[in-house]
Image (cartoon, rainbow, N blue to C red; front, side, top):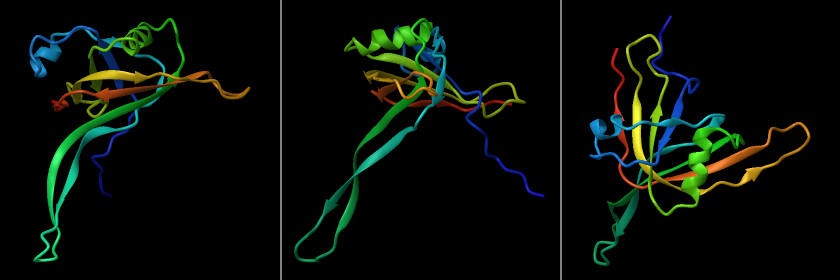
Length: 158
């Protein structure tokens, strides 16, 4: 029987800090203190996407493709609304600020090893609407965090 290298999202945590790192590298981010954001039920997706640039010389009728600018995306967090959670309190402050906030996502990809993969990034909280739902729903919140710089991934060790 084969094995897989896949892992689940269960156990992944996201932390936030209002303090900028001294340097925008793994060491600078690792020196920060992050506050965990509780009650997240879905992280969404982030990652680099390039814009496609097309060049169509009339004489050859051929289309040439190039990579243009890129965007590292946005997390669209879904969560239960928890107004007293310190992490959610920081997110609400970030919503009302034009400043970047700083994030640390720790995956649960190496539960038997010595460390997990960590992804650091700066971001701006762009929206935070409540989701009220029906009688059998938990009051929720959707937080849109737009990545505003490079994603720095530190591989798991173990």
